[in-house]
Amino acid sequence: MLSNQNLRAIWYTETYRSQERQNYLYSQGRTRPGHVVTWTLKSNHSSRLAWDIAVGPPKTLYDVATLNKVGTIARKLGITWGRDWIGSIDRPHFEVRSTWKMATGYKLEGQVIVPSSSKTTVQLLVEDKKEDNKVTQVWNPASPTMRTETENYIAQAIKEGIIQDSHLKDLKNGVMTTDRLLGLYITIQQRRAN
Image 1 (cartoon, rainbow, N blue to C red):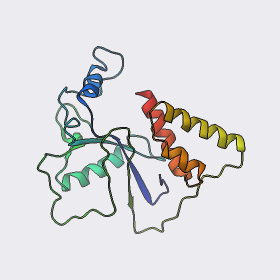
Image 2: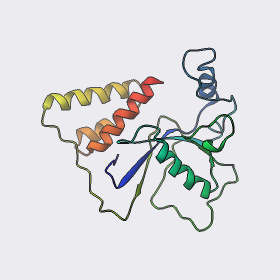
Image 3: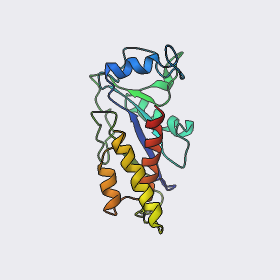
Image 4: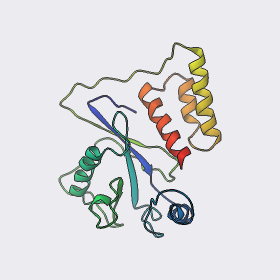
């Protein structure tokens, strides 16, 4: 994940949600411990029309300024933003109708792949062309102990079903960037907290 000043990293934290998962989330803060995180048993996540996002480092996870920028763009594209709801504001939430089409005068740059399960991580990087972009460095710790412990940490997350094994392969093959490793750590921590 790129996080230098001229790039903004946005993570999809939740896309498709089974009805079983929706029921589980709805019970949070009601019949089981935790804060209320959803207001409905019928979510557009279940029909693959909604997604939630988070902001990558160095910003905070739900950085309001960044979410406001994304929301402003979403409105222009005809995407419903959870910030605009009355009563239950949900800044990280976005959704479309089944008939949604890209607004005229706009085009997607790059490729966005929307996963079919919420265990798949996808990243969309938007470049600010006014600044000079720098390439991130491949993670190369000087300490063999640090490398081993990092591999063990990722292997445990794979064993728990939190992430895919391709991340460990990339780390072992020397193609894991420092920024991506940091983003992976955040993703693992978030998923373990749920």
